[in-house]
Length: 456
Image 1 (spheres, rainbow, N blue to C red):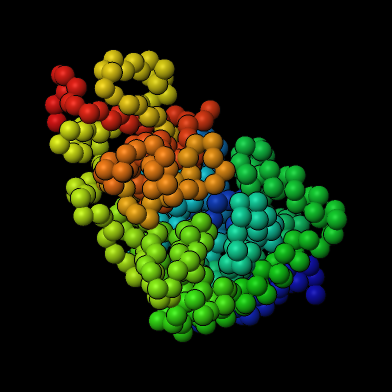
Image 2: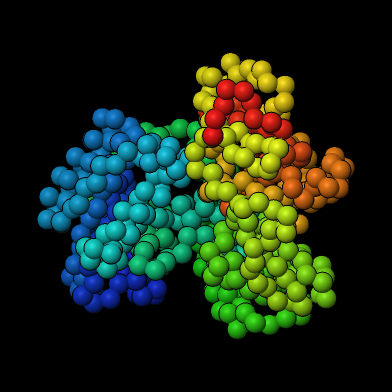
C-alpha cells in the first residue's frame, strides 16, 4: 500500500468511526484553495464512489486581500472544473460585515462563512458541510482557549462532527496533507496573512506549536487524542445534567450544577460565559432561604431561591421604564435628569469640549459593547468591574460610598448582554476602557437640567 492509499484509508476510517457520511448524502467541501482544503477535496473525490455520496464545493471570497483573494477564487474555479465538481462561489466583504457587527475581521469572517454554510444547508444544496480542520488547527484551538481561560468543554477542541459539519482531516497532520498533495502533483495557494504574526492563531502556530513539538514530537496527535477523550466525558456530564433541571442545585456536585446552570441560561436565550456561570453558581450557593439574583441581558435577572433558578424582571418599584438605546440622542431619565449618548470617531475625540458645567462626561470604547444597549435604573443584583480594579464589585456597595441613600436606586446605568458597562457614579467598566486600538468612542453625558439649545 503506497502513501496515498494510507492517507485515504486513514480519512475513510475516521469518517466511518464518527459516522460522518451516510450513503446518498450530498457533501459540500468548504474550499479556500489552501493545502488543507485542496487535500480534503481530492480525498473526498476519491472516496465518493466507495462511500456512495455526491460531492460539491463552495468557495467564499472574503475580499480582504485584493488580487490575492481573486487569485484564490480563480484557483478554486479551475480545480473544480478539472475535477468536474459543482462549485458555488460567494464574494462578500468580510471587513464591512465585521465593521457593522462591531467585531474583529477574523471573528467576522468566520461568522460570515458559517452564515453562508447554514444557508447552503437550509437551501438543500448539501446535507453535510466538510471543513478542512486538521491536527494543528485543533492544537491551536486548545492552546488559544487555555490562554484565554476555559473549562472542560473548551478543552474538547474542535469536534469531528457538529450538527451537519464534518471534519474528515481532524486526525491528519500538516505534513501528511502536504505529502499527499506532492504525491498527487497538485498545487495549492498560500494566504499571505498566514505568514504574519498579527493574528493570535498565527503566533501560536509559528512560535508555540514548534516549541511544544520539540518537547514531544507527537504533541499535535496527543492533543487530538486528549480532546476526543475529553469530548466523551463532556458529553456524558452534559447528558447527566439534563436529568437534574428541576433538582435542588445546592445538593449537586459542582460539575453537574454548573452544567445545569449553562443549560438554564441557554434555554432562556441568555448569553453564556465563564464569569456569568460562576456568578450564578455563587448566587445559588450563597443563600438558601433568601432569594439571590444576578443581572444579565438588559434588565433580565437570573434569581435563585431554595436551590432553584428562575427568570424575572428585577426593576425596583421606583424605576422608570428600561429604554433600549439604538441611536445617538438625548434621553430623559427622570424629571430633573437627562442622559446624552453620542458616538465619536477617533480623529474627533481630542476635539471634544464640554462647555455646559452641569454635564458629567464619560468616554468608552464603543466596539467593546456586547449586543443591545439598555438605559435603566440600577438593579439590586448589578455588578461592575471599575476601571483599574482587579475584581468585580456589587454596584450597590460602590454607590453606598458615593451617593445619599435616596439617590442610589434611581441612579442611571447602561447595560448590554454581559451586564452593566457604565454607571452614573461608578463610571465605566474595565472591559470597555478605551485603549490605543480604539477607533469608535461612545460618549455619555449626564446633566441635571437640559442644556440650552438641545432638543429631544
